[in-house]
Amino acid sequence: MKTNFLLTLVLLSISLFSQNRTEIKIPDIQGYFTLKGDFHVHTIFSDGTVWPEDRIKEAWRDGLDVIALTDHLEYSPHSKDVSKDKNRPHEIASETAAEYGIMLIRGGEITRSMPPGHLNAYFLNDVNKLNQTTFMKAIEAAADQKAFINWNHPGWKAQIKDTVKWYDIHTELYNKGWLNGIEIVNYHEYYPEVFQWAIDKNLTIFGNSDTHEPISFEYPEKEGKFRPVTLVFAKEKTLSGVREAFENHRTAVLFNDTLFGKEEYLKAIYEGSVKILNQSAFVDESKNIFIRFENSSSIPVLLKKTGDDADVKSPEFIKIPALTTIIVEFTMQKNQGKKGVKIAYEAQNWLCGPKTGLKINIGFDAINLNNPVLKSENNLYYFTIPGTGSEFDVRYSFDKGMKDGLCKLSEPVKKTGKFTLYYQLFVNNSPTGKVYERDLYVHRGVFANLLSTGNYSKKYDGGGSAGLVNGMLGSTNYRDGNWTGYEQEDAEIIMDLNKPVKTEAVSMNFLHAPFSWIFSPISVTLFVSVNGKDFEEVKTIRPEPTKESDETEIRTISFDGINKEIRYIKVSIKNIGLCPEWHTGSGKKAWFFIDEIIIN
Image (cartoon, rainbow, N blue to C red; front, side):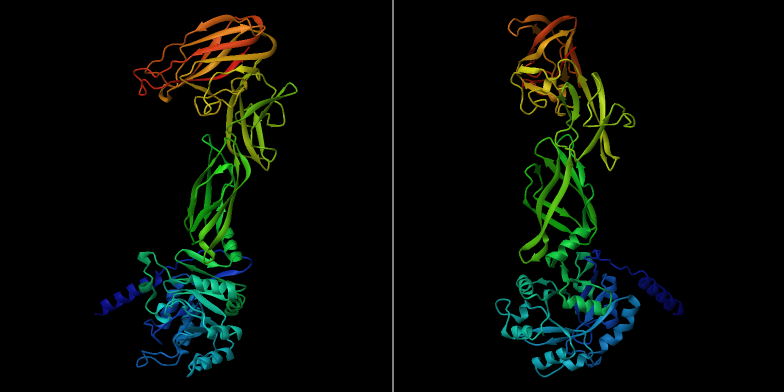
């Protein structure tokens, strides 16, 4: 028997010791402490079933900082077993509150039919003095003690007929300064009309549990339920600090993952909770940007788009769960970057009014380093990146390690022929993000005048009309923006070098990627001319026929041994037309991709 008793004590001690507090993570704002409270709590000293000390322990477990015990003044169904003294709940709970670090407000609930309904009085000296024969005498007794008076559950269905109503007696109380706050949330109910009253009349808002049973019975954790919480923005963590916040209407309400309150407080909480971790985000080769949002608060954010940035395709809805980091995909409409992207959203569950969500601007810099180009000025070549102005510090080098010979984009490229150029973004003189690389070929035909290019695909245009002579070499990725694609079409390309040029050889690259329905051409014929009218055929080259075993590669066709001055070049290219019989796309239209006609 003794052994069993000791075992029970040990197990009970372990149970109490192992209780975990659920921390409600909401940042302090504007120099105020963000306190969490429940200001409508009943005990066994009225119609509740819980001992006052246990209400303190429940509050601690639920992450609260302050509560008010507010037993009914006129109603004591357990009076045979407990005292009718309405000060006793506070007296019993005070020592436990001190032990658990919970601030405890002495309060009571004036309980009358509607109108005026039920009202809580806070910061009382003697709760019993409010137990009067008439409602007005009870309110006067509260006012005499300089109580803060709060209207409870104005939308409680048991006390209203058709709709929520503000009565004349409430106007009288309000005008006398005897109605200071109002519950916009009570138990499991939210009253949007009451929220609007609070806004219109500048009443302090509350969201309270009105708990009678053990809190875990009314808000089962296994069902993901949690009591309503009133947030108090207090100058100090004291009861006088709480009261000062009440009197200056510095509260908000958290209920069912929805936050209610004034815009200035909700905005401050959002800014203290939600961060974009990569404010400068890189655009990938598919024009996508992946933005990382971190929410360090216990409040999820449900965003609905209300305005666009014309240059960016953005999701209609974004959900940022509590205490989570997520990645959200945005897409540039064009293959370029942009500084100062701004997209308007509204937080649907952060309400500044019954129908008004907190307005949020999501902003970031979209940095696109995927499509560099060469440009020519005063017979010098410059490496540049469209969409990145002087506000972005991009540097390049011929050194893969980006250690030697770093140059800014404003400095000309002092190299000719074929070479690889490496480049990277710098922020505050420090390298940021990955090192990009591009193969270039600065040759005699760079920026030649293209007189004819044939009917190429607008989707694969090689960077525009000059894409075939821009010095940028295509990679094995047909989407890299450097390839000019022709679907089933043959092509005749004519270029003017602007003056006679001693030419040794002409070459060009073709992408061979059968799995992507891109094939080497059947034949390529080169013609040259001095006057642009009389063309001399140099040669016809027929690449090796496509085989089923072919892998993706870049095939170079070169016409060597020209050794003459020429000004005009014409290239005739014969497309394979249709995919071969062995191909999965047999009989469907085939492509050829060409890039950079190189003059040496």
